[in-house]
Amino acid sequence: MIEYICLLLIVSQVILLLISPRYRLIWPFSVYYKKVFHPLIQDNKKFKIKFYIIPIFYFVLYLYLIYCYYSKVAPFINNQLWAFEKYMWIPLIIIASPLIFGVFTMFTKPTYTKKYSDEIDNEYAFDNLIFYPQILCRTCQSYKPARSKHCSICDRCVLVADHHCIWVNNCVGKGNYTYFYMFLITNTFSLTYAFIRLLTIFYTTNVYLPKNTLTLTILCGCFSVICGIFTFLQLNLAQEGMTTNEKDKWFTVHEFMRDGKLVRTQSGRWYFADPHDSDISEDSVFYSTNGYDHTEYTLRNFEIIEDPSRITNIYDRGDFLANLRDLCK
Ligand SMILES: [Zn+2]
Ligand SMILES: [Zn+2]
Image (cartoon, rainbow, N blue to C red; front, side, top):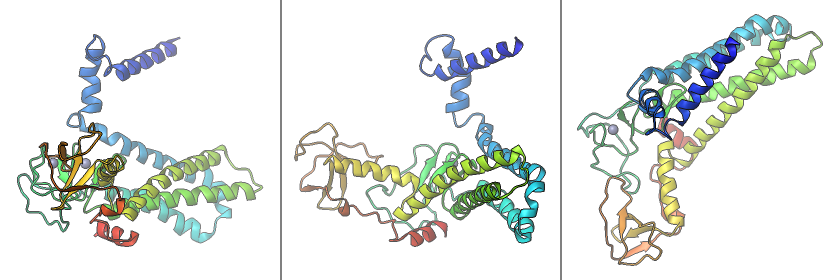
């Protein structure tokens, strides 16, 4: 009986919490929203300890997999493994992926900009399409170099920013791309290896295997798929010569182009036409592609850009390896 009451209490609290943003003006939702939901979920400056929940979850899960393997599974399959595999390969991939590259990715801070300072070693030019010069960050008051982005969790502008990775609670940017890619690749590789190896042992052995072998196989299989998808998406961005942050910006530019609302003046400046304007003419209102500039422009001598090949990504070095080298240096 007591279990049901506890369960009911937990479920009701979670429901109240989840719907509190929707009904935040009505009591008791207002209390849940103000005291719990906002500070705990929405406010990045409060209870920063919450950002360590996912890295700890991942680390504990990984330790559980190692424990499960060495205490429950290895004694039954050791005789089917090669000596090299048993004593070198498996310990190496267990230690290399989350423990070495994970810790490096977590604790290597990317390059941050400084307040009111544009003196930063940034080799990237402003393309005057998705990045504009002389822009002061609204939040941290530093001059934003090309390819940078403000992170609300780190509370700073990050150079060549990709995203704030919740798995390691750190921003991925200039200075830690190598560790981040290695973290993704080694995780995917070691989990896939463990999954395939366990599967082959399952189907070829005649000896009894404990239940934990199946649990371990399923967990390795599921996480190898998740890590594989993350790795593929991230490497695909490198192939395209853009970061996750830039992908969103390029998406907006191409969306306006598809709608026939991206224009370029003879002087090479880029503008978006008013999305509500159905017919673009010289009387139309235009906005700069610079999100910090809210001026309404009227333009003369412009052309509507409809061909994607007319839009150049100057940060794309041309091929996958060149882009990867560029991000990792
Ligand atoms: Zn900033
Ligand atoms: Zn961050």
